[in-house]
Image (cartoon, rainbow, N blue to C red):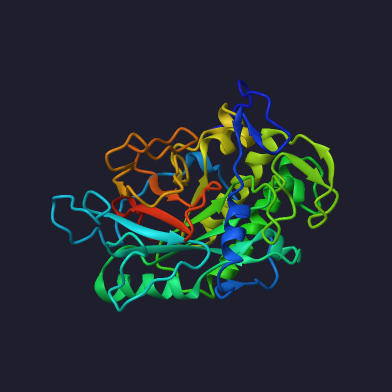
Length: 362
């Protein structure tokens, strides 16, 4: 299916105003929190990337049956400390969050079983030697995998790649072909990094976001999605405005490479305002058949906790993007506290629907 560039609004070229919504700096808040804690769990990626040709468009990826993870062993009634209907799990992501006690491990701070950890397998800025870090916790991954493999609880460990847009490509020339190749290169590096980890969840998420002022994570406030930089690590803008067609070509390159060169299914982490500010609201923004992890709506509190896709007893609910809603089978995760710049004092907390997990690809 060809994608149309029509009917999408002008996109902000200044971070902080995403179609009228003020951006919150997720990584600034996390760095502020991290400075009060041990730096263990942050690792720096090394190695080289490969460039291989890709094939199809992400928006046309077929849905797959939900098998291969544990749907859960809770009774039908929803009780305090449980994340909702059968198959939902609490989890954490990115920087370390202390998991105490003995196995099977409990979700930190809020109780219930620890149902999964999703870590940053790589960062475009680290890969480009910008001296930035990777938000990965070996301890959280180990605890999640123990619960999954030994006690049949949750999803174990999943991963995401912190993606750089076309504007931080050292070879940017404004063409969709170069953007597609840049997406493929990042996907190749993602699979290289994943090969060194014990990953049990079959979706690899492309992290598409506007990090803002995020020293130690990214030198580019918009990660190169809306502005072109003089070089990847400098943070100096050479021109503003990247066509949605070019941004989407890069996303397609990443998606296709993962889909055609691994057993993983490609997915995406973002939010509706961020997604729309990059891809618009026309054809280039449509990803109805792509697995999604969102961070809106989110809260700086850890109570009330989620019950399904809403905080229990409230109207605060997960908001997906690109044409996907919480009722769709491709809505799989919600970073309900700690994401989008919210600060709860502990870290990122997630709601996971294991019922919708795709099968491992053949």
